[in-house]
Each structure stands twice: as C-alpha cells, then as structure tokens.
Length: 149
Image (tube, rainbow, N blue to C red; front, side, top):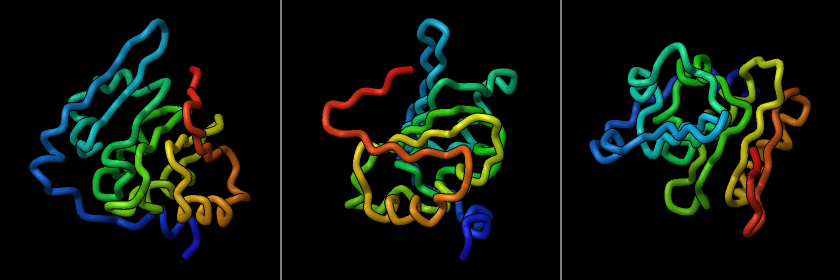
C-alpha cells in the first residue's frame, strides 16, 4: 500500500468508556493555544470545540496516535504545525501508521512537525518510506529535550 491508500483506511471508533471519559483541555498561554486530547475520540472532542477557533499552536494527539481515536474530519478541520505523540509503543503498538499517513497527506502551506517522546522503530521505517512527501517532519526527542513554541 502507498501512503495515500493508508491515509484513506477507515477504522472503527474506540468504544472504550474509559477513553471516552478522558478529559481534554485547551490551554491558552500568551498568544499560544494548545490542545491536549488525552485518550479521547478526536471527532467527539471536535464537537465541543469552537468551530471558529480550529487553529492551534500544538496538538497532543489522542490515545497515543491510535487510528481508532483520530478520523479524517479531525485531521481536515484542526490546523496545527505541531503534533505530539506520547508513547513508547510497547503495550498497544501505537502510534498507528494510518494516523501518521492522514497527517502526512494533509495538504498544507506549512511544515507539519510530529514530535515523539520515544523513537519507535515502525515510525522510523514509515518515515523513510514517505521521505519524498513535502511539508512533514518527524522529530524524536532526546531525554530532557524541550519543545519551544
């Protein structure tokens, strides 16, 4: 499968009551707006967000980048240049490549950066396969490294 085919895969939404009960938060700090979605379902969180304000300085992807928590509607409507994925991939094998493909295939005039707190081997391999796609950068944080907005 190529990257566009992967990005179009439709998956089942996460039905976990625990994940659907997660608390999402928008943080305003100076002129920055940060969206942290915990383990929520992105499309459901979208319903609660102001449709006028879909631009964020940073978005922490829900449920470690799980394909079951992120859909095309969310990727299409939320604008950000910085995504965070927090996982070591050991327990549930997140992030899902379908999620990364959706972000990679989103056409933007800006570079989309995806920050990972661990270097996950399947993500490194995926990054090498999509090397020719413009406007995306994968960044693997080193211990103690910080992100400045």
